[in-house]
Amino acid sequence: MAVYTHVDAGTLAALLLRYDIGTAVSFKGIAEGVENSNYLVETTRGRYFLTLYEKRVEASDLPWFLALLTHCADAGLPVPRPIADRSGKALQTVAGRPACLIEFAVGVSVTEPTSAESYAVGAALGRFHHAVADFAIERPNALGPAGWAQVAASCAGQLDQIEPGLEALLTDELTFLQKSWPTALPRSTIHADLFPDNVLMLGGKVTALIDFYFACTDLRAYDMAILIVAWSFSTDGRHFDPAIAAALLAGYSSTNALTDPELAALPILCRGAALRFALTRAFDWLNTPADALVTRKDPMAFARRLTWYTSATPAQVIGA
Amino acid sequence: MAVYTHVDAGTLAALLLRYDIGTAVSFKGIAEGVENSNYLVETTRGRYFLTLYEKRVEASDLPWFLALLTHCADAGLPVPRPIADRSGKALQTVAGRPACLIEFAVGVSVTEPTSAESYAVGAALGRFHHAVADFAIERPNALGPAGWAQVAASCAGQLDQIEPGLEALLTDELTFLQKSWPTALPRSTIHADLFPDNVLMLGGKVTALIDFYFACTDLRAYDMAILIVAWSFSTDGRHFDPAIAAALLAGYSSTNALTDPELAALPILCRGAALRFALTRAFDWLNTPADALVTRKDPMAFARRLTWYTSATPAQVIGA
Image (cartoon, rainbow over all chains, first blue to last red; front, side):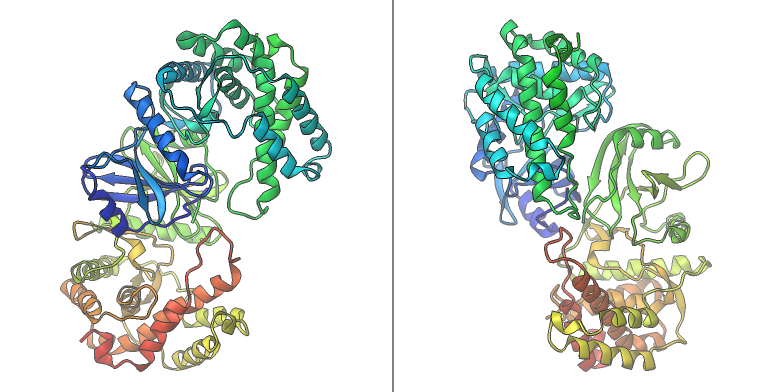
């Protein structure tokens, strides 16, 4: 992760003139985000992120993302608020890229979540789903079953370069999930990428949910499945911790309980979540030079999760 | 520029336990620095940089750099202070790399310096040279004339790939400078890399001199020459601004005047500074893949400066 588009102090100063947020006191490029360029901007009035949206984010999607963040912030959720300029506009053009100033959020990403932290994150996801019940604008999920098939097709014939057997594992699973993926469950705006990286915490409390650039409209329980698959395993995917899965679900139930059909669908939704990240990581692995500065994330960490889910009982999936 | 070594929240928390500076409130990887990994750490007590020293910095040099920064901070210079842990130790090992927590400094790097800003920076360099008069430990300059010859040798036969004629320009200049480089001028600890990037300013005042990792012991006036060569030209090296050169010198004189022999040597010292950056940039250019995330800096920007100096009069060099 790096800064892709350089913004100089003069450009920043010109941008800040559009806002009522003071003048720049400090300005640092930040090495994080899904292939966006991020700067930490401190002004005489406060602290902000300046995000320049790079190629992976469609400019036409930006109004949706910014509306979602504003909706959530208005609802009192711990979500960084996009800052509007004097004319009410949040979306800008900076150094030729679409860009937005966003509220700075304190907090640190958890590396090895405890059960208590997992409970707090589950509760935060429940609050998020509750708050977006009246966020009516839909955005299709480009990485649902049809999207997985596209990613799989573009990796076809190459997956066993990563690990022998991976091609069969992922294509068999794709075939199975395309037949059995649920469609009648409650739909919602979902975060769709709520990994520990994307949750800031402080003293056991969630201070911010961040990086909404995969958010979309899809099955509400699929968001819970992604959370469980992302949080309940060791990073390498070799060890499942039932106490974490149970805490995530208990936390969610404390703010926004899932229905019985949603709970019953969790095993298959978790298989879908594991497949989704195994596939996209495999694609990135095959398409990123080994010596690139960008750290390649190991697709096998999610292939192993997938294998675990294919033989787990429903009770095991929910950590019971 | 990017983060090369990943530090997780658990590692940071363990590190902070060694210090009396509170617990982590925020933790962001920063995309800056000379191939080091930098994190911005906010704690309950203050803000700090955590720098992990990567391959370009010799671990054996770190005690010298940290002693220099501490000496300057003690002298009241605007220089970020290394933070000592409870046992008095500033140099740590984090994620397998030598590392140091350093005071955070506010301020923004100037992109297009004005004469007033240049005067302020010249004055700051003068104060720095004054403050290090009693910093007795020496560190040789690896990028003096002998170092230039090594860099030139490792680029031999390839320089004209960058631009036809570059090989002759740089090797002829190297031969000339090796014969005529002054040796009897006052020596000092010098910053040796005081580009606009390495100066933070706020409201026209210098808030911090940063990135001392080329600092060494060498001719004091050579530091002034580097400052003039770095600041007085358009970024591409095509346009010299005499008012900036004059302001840098006037600022320096206001705090620590150069001697007559030093002033008389400036034309040749500026040629040396231009050659030094043309050579190291050429080396990096030839040894960095064009598609690397690291931005390659154009060696021609300094080759053009060098050409300007080879035909400039002494009066022109000092902006008179």
